[in-house]
Image 1 (cartoon, rainbow, N blue to C red):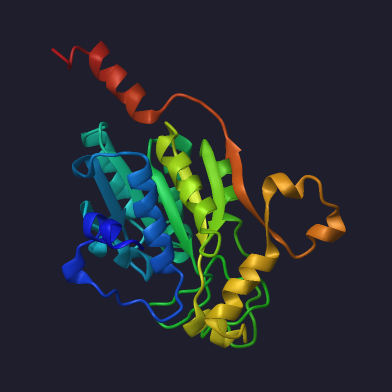
Image 2: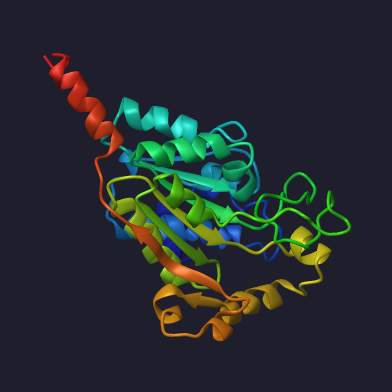
Length: 273
């Protein structure tokens, strides 16, 4: 991260961060900061909300209005902030467990309402902070401390989950494909409605070690070799796409945004007088 960007967007007195060597979360946090800068947003009108988990430590490092909330409740807090002041740009940084396990109900209802939030899910496929338990995105058959013989659950596809619940912008990027990830977050911020961007992270300490994925460099190289842009994938055969992960913009549509409709009710009731 360029030093000027660090000084402008980070609380330098809180650095260095606590993430493990090789963790992808620092890269994804930088991508969020760069996207905010690229959008030209007033930092005083940006709110970063996080829950609990490895990813959620990001809120403490970022030099904006920040809320480090309770486990699974980041989207609920963010909804309250947005309804109280719709002019704010509200960005949620959350993890795969925080967003889709304990926070799953809040996620699907925020999608359903189409409230103007940008949710960036740092997905490392495991509960890293609390000891390596398997999460709703741990691939079928992979191991965790609570699945020593392999996970028999089938994992969520987070963008598909969000789209099916009503999100009007969904995307997926990786910690390796930095320019693409920054652009996807920018698009989510600019989209007027509920946006979800999944960022595939790297956890060499728990997920990688438990599943013999090699070093952090090996895990980033795996992303490089196995993630395919969705536009490019349209020209590829089913055999070529076997075992690959699609990245890029997954879905986009337009429909009325929640706070706009809410404020219209207030106006009709004379609440703006």
